[in-house]
Structures are given as structure tokens and as C-alpha cells.
Image (cartoon, rainbow, N blue to C red; front, side):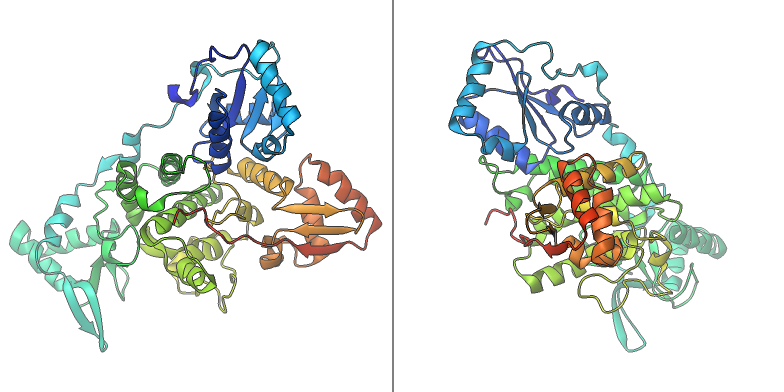
Length: 487
């Protein structure tokens, strides 16, 4: 944790202490802090986002997996909804408590800086500049890249293998064989993308620079000059920067995000530079855990990047287009939001409204897809609307635990699962309807899956009783597609 993670010293006007556990960029956290500030109540903020020790401590002392969590001295109030639902009498008692009574020893501790985990410095993410980067930058200015016809179709931003070799011989002075080897190396390093063959050929075969592979991809048009030391760390850092953007562009009342104001932000410019590094990443050797963390983080960051550049979709047709077009070039291939969710993370299963699977048998992206669907990803992906799970950053080392916690937290909330004992009815998020096959395929298997993933929630005892009685009615909660975007 950096020094700013503990935002304030114990305020003088209070004998006691108000403590908030939060994460950067969390709208619910921001709303709680804004409410306390408007009430003139100072507080100590403990950011647990990048500290697994603090995250575990939070679960141990509160019994909750969600943020924010607020304490008045040693009295645990709960989250933002719990605070907002306090009666005036209950609130007055809590304010008097911290106003006149010092925080007792069993109040939640304020972490010492030396106990916190240090962030990986930004320089590590860039690692080293590729020694072929200058060559690519020069070639971009050569005038050779243009539009070419092939099989009665025009391909923009292309060049032939023969022209590249001739340019290398003329301007870099190697012999022809050495020039061909240089071109092969550019292809191996994923600076070049062949349109129809594998590898490189000194022929009229067409090629593109990877940065031109899709002009609509949000990280295209700039050369990936650096090679990221770690795909997982790159995705974590990108997601952290997006969360930082959130925290700096939330309206004072915490209700809306000003995406338009992010465009000119220095943080957003740095984020875009990091996103170019996705172009040439090697994804083939990632483990299951690394793939999960990487693609979840990239998906969540890509949604926000799309909102910044295009604005959030406002209706069903815009959403369909949005999730099938907003994309990044990753490892030399184009991945849309649909490709990441349904192609990679769901093991190449058809998504909502899809007639065929995202990746065909010959698609190289199929080699990156998970072998089996991971149902827990549905409680980690945030598509930018109110009913989505909250924003978090995931690490490869702790991905399974983090997904478990996110799932328990979502099911524990009102948007995930509601149980009406009198009606013997369980109301679940629409996620369980849309992706029913991922949770077993039948209502009975879905309910059993929910029961097994409820954690220590009070709902679990109630659901157990209903499951033992049988004849449970399963319905689905309305899904709030409205965004937090400031018009």
C-alpha cells in the first residue's frame, strides 16, 4: 500500500474514528465517502485493492466479501446500502459515539505501511524496447504500405513480402538472404501479420503490420515498441489504471461517471500506450490461471475504453453492435468483447443471440480458449451497467480465490439472489437464465450450484431448507441495463 492508501490522520473534531474499507474506483465506496463528507464527518479510508493481506483481514473481521465496509469505532455498520438505510435515530447514536468516545482497542486496526504489499513499478511492464522497433517505425514511413487488390478484394494498409525484402536490401544494406531472415524475424515477433499464409514468404503474398490488423481495434494505429514482461501483470496494471480513472472522474455525489472528461486525461493517455503492448503478446504459453486473470482484466478494461471512445450503448441494438465490435489486437489477433467472454473464457460456447460459436476450427484464437467453461467468470466481468458485478482487479496467483469471493459477494447481494420462503421462490439474476448451461442446464442444478457457492451467507441456510422441501419456484430478477455515464 502506498502512503495515500490511508487518506487521513485521525481527525481532531472526533474523539473516536470512522473507518472505511474500500477500493479505488468503486462507485459504492465513492458514494459513501461523498455522503460522509457532505455530513461533515471525517473518516479514515483504507484501500484494500492491491493488498491481499488486507483483503483477507477485511473478510475475517467483517464476515463480508464486498466493499465498502464502514465502522464507527468498533461498531460495524456494513456497506453503503446498510448505512443509507439507517434511521435518523440510529445515525445520531453512531455520530455521538465517535464524537465523544475514543476508539476502543477492538476497533478495526489502521494498517502500517510496512505491512502493505508494494506495487510493481511501471517500468517493469515495459521491460525492454524491442530492437526491431526502430526498423518498423522507419518502414511505416517508407510509403510502401498502401492498398492492394487480391481475389477481387481490396486490402488497405498492406504490402507484399517482396516489397518488404526489396526495401530492406535497398535501405538497410543486407544481402537478399539476410533481408528475408530479417522479415521472418519481424513475423516471428508479431510485428507482421500475413493475410493468407503462415510465416513469411518473399513473394506477392500480402502482409500487414500488427498495429493495422484491425483499424477499428482500440489499441491499433501505434507500434508496440516494448515487450511486456508479463501478460498477467500488464492486464492487472491496465485494470488498475482504469479504476484510477474512475476515481478521478466520478461526480461528487458518486452517481455518475464522466467518460468524456477522461479523454484528455494523462492517465488515459498512459493507459492507451500500455494497451498497444497487447498487440504482440505471447498468449500460447499462458496457464489456465493466467488466462483467466488476463482476459477478465482486459475485458473489463476494454469495456471502459469503449465507453470513453464511443460512449456507452443505450439500447439493445447498440449493445449487440458494441459487444461484437469493440476490440483489441492481442497477440496478433483481434478479440472483441464477445470473443473474450464466449470464445476464450466460456470455452468457445455460443453467447446471447449468437447462432454459431465464436471461433471456428481453423481459427488460431481457438488455441487460446479455455478447455472448459469457467462459470465463475460471470461474476467478475463488468459490462458497464448497473446490474453487473462490481469492478475489481484479478491476479493469476489468486484468481480462483478471488473468483470465489466475487461470486459469494454477488450472490449475497440483492442483485444476485433473493429468497422468498413464504412463496418457496428463489429469484436469481438474469445471468443464470442467459447462461443456464454453464450452471448445469436445469433449474435443479442451477439451485444446487447457487447453494454450493453462497459461502456463509444467511441465505444458504434458508435455501437449504427449501431444497430439502423441494418444489422451488425459480424466477429471474429484472436486469438494470442503465449506465452510470454522465450525459
